[in-house]
Length: 540
Image: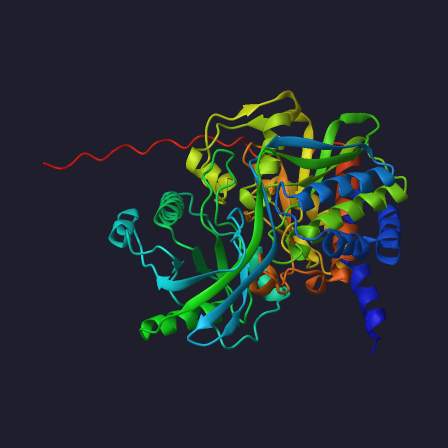
């Protein structure tokens, strides 16, 4: 029987043998890949990069002091490795926000410390305050009028209680053969998202009306339930970042178990008094946020571009390790690997660390609009909150700029710290054999799947929706979806350093091969405005 190491070597040889014609056709440089693997797997700095970004700098809410620190730190890192044109590029965002302290206790009917996080862009409490908990059940804006005059001094619990999952065994996941096979099976998408868009619009307007009502009526605070179980507190935005906004009331999220306990007391007609102490601030007069850019100049085709990116901003509960310090560490490490090996392609390789992703792909959208192509701005209601403006509605027309024709591809990493298992082709059939060839030398590291499926929710969409080749890698989820995403557990301990080493090596290889490939990456047809459905006439 062959030893595991010899068996792996045989399997790797068979992969290369089978993929040989494809590798040769695509000009895959195996000697170069060996050098990249050596640098990235044996001399990696990716763990150090992530630790500095998380433990050193901390959470990075867009336009906060920590985010500004992170942007400048990343710029200096690029520069120290010899990259050129390392700079920050600004766009209009809105007010910044940060917090230093959040303490919530139940005082009556029994003293209990509660697990809580403040909601971004809501103010602090100006010291310790107390208020009586009140369940505020509203489904429509008009429902608020029924409670006028009754909420002064109250802490408004605006969500329903929910059942928590007491079986927490399924919290960590890696892809297996079946899940990857399922991922590679294309399913015809539902292109009509009107119901979802209408629902998002309604939720936003209801929240906006609630904040105004609570402020006018003298409520002490607003409480939401965490969308995760097992004591995990998941908190995002609860206020308004627009420069002309009116300050609302403090807001916080409670762990599901503690939120449910308060509501059980209220249902038993017991008086519940909470003590809340939140130190938070908004930063007025600084509406410009920044993306961080740097590049390795190309040679013969230096006006053509290959790009890689991840979003540097995070939410505030943890330190933004898996969302998305991991992706940023990989992009930074890929830049370091290529620079350390002195590798330059024919095309310029540009690295981007975005801000404003969590508020709707705002940083990458602004960059794409400035350099490649723009679409009409969304309605004001979408700009004001944390709704995903990047994928709510597609607006027309698309107006390409001169550089639109010069971008070969953009590669994104933003699904936690799990290893790369493949890449989403975004319905671009022409790239499947190209990516298959580029992945073949990494089959022994678990990366070999190319799926025609689309994936959403991150910055490659800013490129894809204006007809540019934008791609997101397939990753093992680990505990990203179940524990760390937007939660207080999004910290360095939940990142896998070995997985990040693998991802950085693959990222570096993809970038170099895209930059040296004779032809640019094939494109899909430009997006077209859908035809309006004719209105049906009523029958006589």
